[in-house]
Image (cartoon, helix red, strand yellow):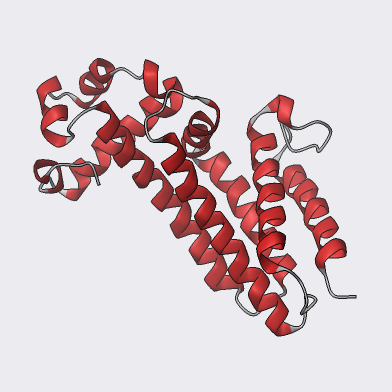
Length: 214
């Protein structure tokens, strides 16, 4: 973590407020254009306080990243626990619809992800992307491995390759939901969440036909 002991000693509610406002600023403007002056004005604190809490702007961004990612991880872990024992494609569909729900409930979380994905001026960008991709791969790998054990998937399925493909497909659906030019006929951008979930179901059904045990 890049937060100082001074920040960690703040009351939890104040910590969350600082990180929540910083998340809004970075998600809206990106790393390079995010303004610490704007941030401290909204928080009603002195600019020097930010540098007491975090070593620099990069340290603040790293802390905000982990703050945002933890919210996503908590949601997906709840989905994984709630669907354990179901077939892997039902579980993948629930996971994907949870992502669509998160984009609707707090667009900043996915906006920050898109900033990291597409903007090259972010410090330690490869490290942050690696953190996200490893979690996604391991999350899906766990679902697929259980699917093999339950007999839903071919026991000879090459799990690492399958997890790579599935993670890439589901991530693209979420990007298409947020970015119009990435949709290309899938039908998830600019529609109601119900219609987006129907399109997500069609994608998962294709995965079922490709990976499911005959």
